[in-house]
Length: 87
Image 1: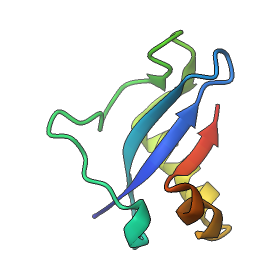
Image 2: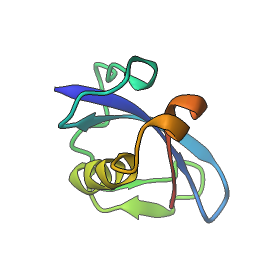
Image 3: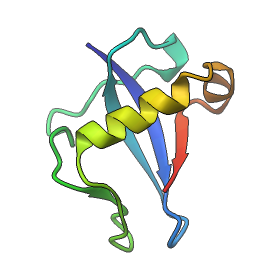
Image 4: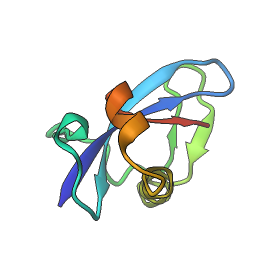
């Protein structure tokens, strides 16, 4: 199992939240992360802790969004140090 660093940027308030998201494929070293022991895996909804805007209904939907975003290649994500998703 592989984990990738993801920054979610809220479209409602522009707050940024960092997540460590499970993916099914190999992740380049600069993007790898380790989920916290208390982790957010299995969260019922995923959204902005600042304003409460809901981005994804569950962690599986977030994982699919990350997979879709990284299919286009790793370059821009490696340069940024994370996969950036605006929601």
